[in-house]
Amino acid sequence: MKDTLDLQKFYPEEIGITEVTQNEKEIYIHVSVQSKNCTCPKCGVASEHKHGTYKRKLQDLPILGRTTYLIVNAYEYQCDNSSCDVTTFVENVDGFLNYYSRMTERGEDFICTLALETSCEGSARICRSMNLKTSGDSIIRLLKKRYVAQPEVPCGSIIGVDDFAFKKRHTYGTIIVDEATHKPVAILDGRDGKTLKEWLSNNKHVKAVTRDRASAYSTAIKEILPDAMQIADRFHLHQNLLEAIRNTVNSVLPVDIRIPSDSNSIAEPSVENDSKKMPCSVDNLNEYNQKRVQLYTAIKEYNSAGYSKRQISKVLHCNRNTVTKYLNGEYEALCKKDFRSGMDQFYDYIIKALISGISRKDVYRNVIEKGYKGGQSAAYDYMNKIIERFQIDVAIYKSSSPEALQNKKALQKYDHLSRNGIFRYLWMGVELSANHKAYILQKYPKLRELMRCVQEFREIYEKKSMPLLYLFIERYKNSELKEISRFANGLEKDIEAVENSVASELSNGFVEGTNSKLKMVKRTMYGRCSKALLVAKLMYAKVE
Image (cartoon, rainbow, N blue to C red; front, side):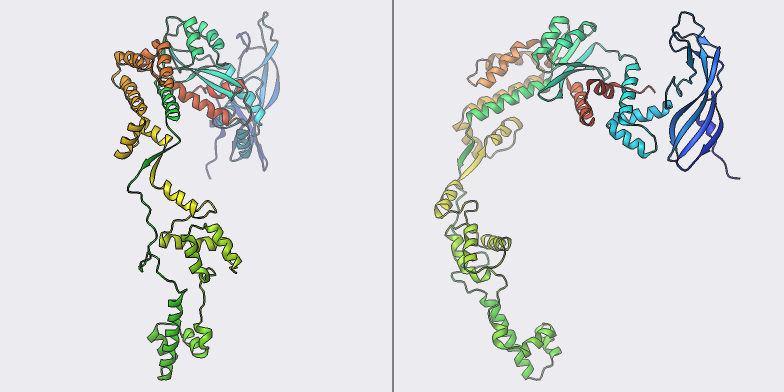
């Protein structure tokens, strides 16, 4: 006999299976709870006084894709504690059945695991496809209930603080992350520091706080925990300098920086007879028609000499159908000009028009008037091939005369650099040619100060040197460049936190990572962005 599946092994010892029934879609497992006593959920007093029995129907994880229900024959106990408000309560099995639950614990664990990875509505759709019946609202309630029931997460002595948006430009919040575990310990309303003060008042064991440059957080921490060490985030300090450099470059430099280039002269189209240059005169497809004349003459000659069609095709390397066509056809019909493209008949005009500076759009309009019946795309492709072959300089974007072409040639005498290109050179070291560097540094001497500012600020953190920090602030706080001066004065106002950012290895990176996860969770909630659900999805942790 084949081995049978022992379902009893998948259930706790306190539960005994009495009967299993099934249909095409559902499985019903009848069980009884074999307990002798039960503990009151309110007062915690164990009771052996059975008040009665009744049946409970609970949903379990599906078996082989079928919805599975447990029909539980349970006892109802009477609480013997006279001071307890509870009269009767239902027996439960720890870790498997709860009081008044409609699903087993492992079923709820599976649903919560799904809900933490995707939206609650999405989790409900996945569950329904597996024949586990639930709804998005039920999953929301379950997740909130489990989060509220779990013990409060302890907080270490080092935390990180950052802000985030519940809804951009409308409502904001504050997230607090424990540095030791890199897990969030609180999500607060607002980012003005009021709720942070309340939280810090209840957690005065905190010794160090990492944060960005927000003044509201700095003031709140100083007021509640004056002895706590504040550490400014190095990334945000560099980001502040980046914005100062970018704004200064935008104010100092023009939009288009033109650097004279001797090597960028534009040569006129030559009229030499070679494969890449335009010939002196053009006879439209004369070579192609001459080949037809030669083929016609050769076939007639071989035919008159007594060659068969097969022999002629072998000698002239052409198809026998072609030989037959030339033998039976008339000379004028076979050898007259047969244009391969509808634009070929305007070949001479097109070249002259493009060289004179007429745009492709106007050329196309003119050939339409001359009788061209093809499409615009085919005409533009034909003209582009001529432009590429003969290296003709044309006015592409404007329907212009030679004046536009001359203006274009005048612009092409310069190398053009953008302000963004200069910024990338200053901040990221993107290479520029020696001529370009010499030109921009000579014409815009303030760029030298910006280069020195970036190098000196980075050197502070490379060498972890406090004297370099003080020298940097003194040198640039009175700078003529307003953005750089503003940045240096900001460092001086927040000098303690900036000093700690140089001396300490701590940063706000672990908070930024958790904040990114929060934003990801928020985006998967499909509009259900209440704070309670967001907190539950971010901070609920399944107990292993």
